Amino acid sequence: MTASCFITFEGIDGAGKSTHIHSTASWLRAQGRQLLLTREPGGTPLAEALRSLVLQQPMDALTESLLVFAARRDHLQQAIEPALARGEVVLCDRFTDATFAYQGSGRGFDHTVLATLEAWVQQGRQPDLTLWFDVAPAVAAQRRAAARAADRFEAEDLAFFDRVRAGYAARAAAQPQRFVRIDAAQAPADVAAQVQAALMAQGPWSAR
Ligand code: TMP
Figure 1 (cartoon, protein in one colour):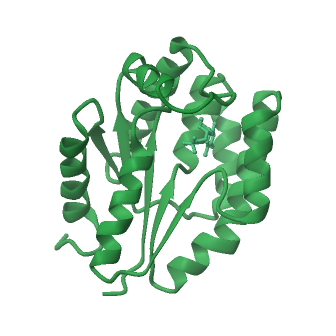
Figure 2: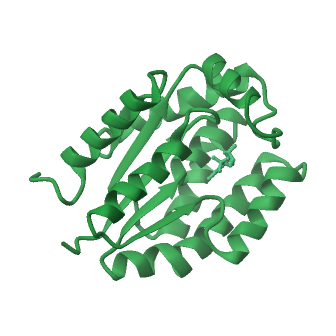
């Protein structure tokens, strides 16, 4: 089957989505599907350079928003749209829901400006399916503590991640047709089972 599909993985830092995007990619490749596994900010040389700036350099929320949308524009034009045009499945670790959750709800930046940038940059392109890995910020913080050194976002406090989580919940409530909430507090095997069930039910290979 060559039906293209754009699937995004979202959640607060430490929710575990990156592990599951890699196992999803392996599962789809084992079925012989062509896919692009990518991430935001990033996915092209320019967008990866912008990612380094956003994760490391101090800046205000408008600058952050402009840089993540600039990275997204390049990523869409150079990588995502061509892959979808070839009929591939695109698995993307974060997309615009992260901007509404982190810059909008986390930083308190104007959602109307973000919606304008979203319309300019995406020209109507939206994910077909978004898996939202939801977990309490305290649990995610414990998981992060065991991992690598924190970047500018990972170093934020629990109140910031409470707001980011609420931002994701609001996006999911506003667009329920494309969001599936994954209970990311469960053991990895149980989370993987939820992910597979969501993909079977809502991917282009489902009988929907
Ligand atoms: P990652 O560590 O999951 O790859 O994500 C990088 C960080 O960038 C993460 O802390 C969330 C943040 N981010 C934003 O603040 N806004 C965005 O639009 C995106 C895509 C990521």
